[in-house]
Length: 216
Ligand SMILES: [Fe+2]
Ligand SMILES: [Fe+2]
Image 1 (cartoon, rainbow, N blue to C red):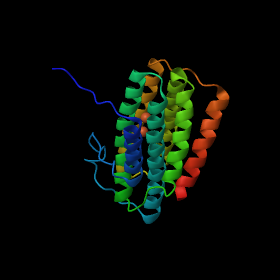
Image 2: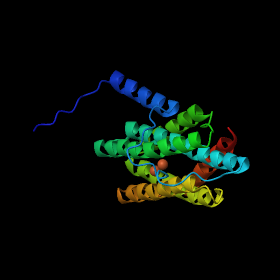
Image 3: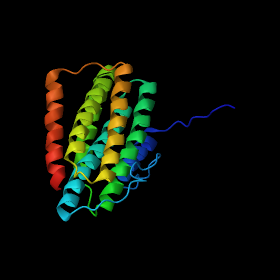
Image 4: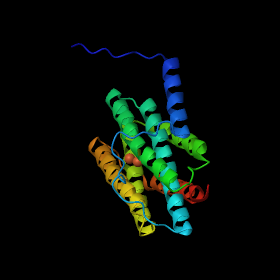
């Protein structure tokens, strides 16, 4: 059977992008394709202090996933290659599971997502556009380095969670596995290795986001 693919005008595309932003920031995009990793894990007893700490860590990870949505959307728009555009859009869909899982865990912990999510989204979108405009191998290099830094960050959070918060632990463990796969995929697709000073700027930028999202 012949497949028909719809051609979108620039206005259609702008509306679709705007819709994605609203869905990401409003939590309306928060249904996951895959099962919730904490589905079969019992709800642990957590003291108020532990609950607050777990929620703060999950808020950081949710904000990170908001950034991932922005980065992948922007890179899909600015990529020069049709296949790479599709891969970036597909990656954004997979990252959406992470967004949904972190959001669900925050609800369970009676907490909230970062109030600064629109700001994180806008900043990451601008960075993603810049990476995409630099060319596909650099864009992929940016994905590989971002995912590598996220893997390291998740390792840290897995150690910092309250010991009995197994629900959050299972979510972060699955996310870490996925992010490592995204990194490897970007490398196999021809990612360039970024200069050290860019890696350093990326680390500083994400450290600022982590510090602020812990509280707000
Ligand atoms: Fe993710
Ligand atoms: Fe990822």
